[in-house]
Length: 183
Image (cartoon, rainbow, N blue to C red):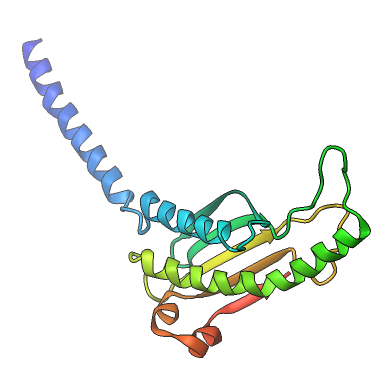
């Protein structure tokens, strides 16, 4: 019996060592760790929170980012471009307020695209472990109120470019490498 125990213990240790080595080999270190992604998310949140000087836009929740091996990073956010002037005693905006909200939203879409371009470059700079030929993408969903005129205001604005092109380009050349999609 004593020899059986002395034989099983080393076999058990060898088994545990081999299984541990197999798991370690199979699970490579992720290219983008959670800390890096949180830095990019918080940076996008800060950009979108101070996007309007009068603070009449609202970031809904927190931005989220994912890394897709061989593709790149996707950062998403949801926001309201203009808060509706509603209160408990006044549940709906007046017709004039609705017209002004619509004008303000239309004016803010180009401003949003500009700050998202800067955020895209910032993300490319901070996510240094991403290969240069992978993409950096930001998608912002623009929420709407059921009572507002949504004509001409996109539901989503998406910007994307390769990390290499974002880091190498400046000015007008940067505008040329960023693909912008409005849905």
